[in-house]
Amino acid sequence: MNAHSTTLPVSAALSAEARVGRYDWNHLSEEINGFGCAALEKLLSPEECRQIAGLYPEEKHFRSHIHMARHGFGKGEYRYFKYPLPDLLGDLRTALYPRLSNVANAWNERMGMAERYPSEHGVFLKQCHDAGQTRPTPLLLQYVPGDFNCLHQDLYGDLAFPIQVAILLSEPGEDFTGGEFVLTEQRPRMQSRAEVVPLRQGDAVAFAVHNRPVQGTRGNYRVNLRHGVSRIRSGLRHTVGIIFHDAK
Image (cartoon, rainbow, N blue to C red; front, side, top):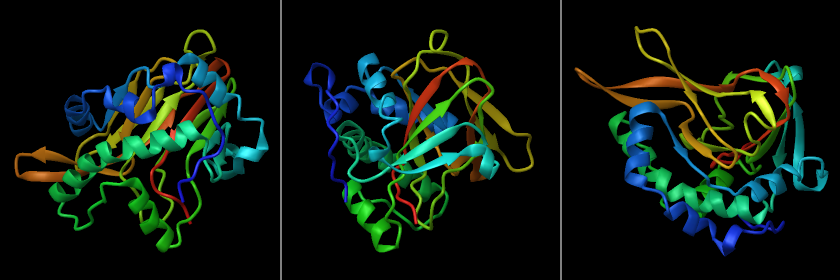
């Protein structure tokens, strides 16, 4: 289900669990609750970023290749990994999930939704697979000048985990210019709010996929979120996306 094969060296033998555990998750949870997103600085080393980006032309790692323009998604391309995932990505997916499931369950409680997410990612993946969602969703994206990613939501079936993670593999100002990560929040009877998240190479952003609760004067209400990437001005930009549910 969540087996891994491709081995990518881990900086200073630091496991995914150890590196995820370095962060102040109380603070990150407050950021996600307050703004719909939170940055995890230096989740990957520059060398790890280059190694993951270097997988892009190797078709053996991927199940499909998407050209965004053909589907009206924007301009650029990405590839979905196939199982087994590269070790580091699979391990990060497993290590990040429990921290985020706590936030996700609190959100559902506040929004009056009955669904609760199990504490272990393997258990959640089994729920996805039992529901017919068996295709892996982690993906590697590639942008060249003029490319962009339209505002969207990554929902691949009835079961969708409400938070995902994107890791910037390229260095802004050196490898590329432009290409900012953008998150928009549509609020009931109010104008939309935009959030631009500044990232450096190896930084990750955890963000809401679809809905999240906001405390109002009359209790909690839902806001609707979409994310995208602004136009690449120059260079080459790679990002890896870690989505926790699988697809039909």
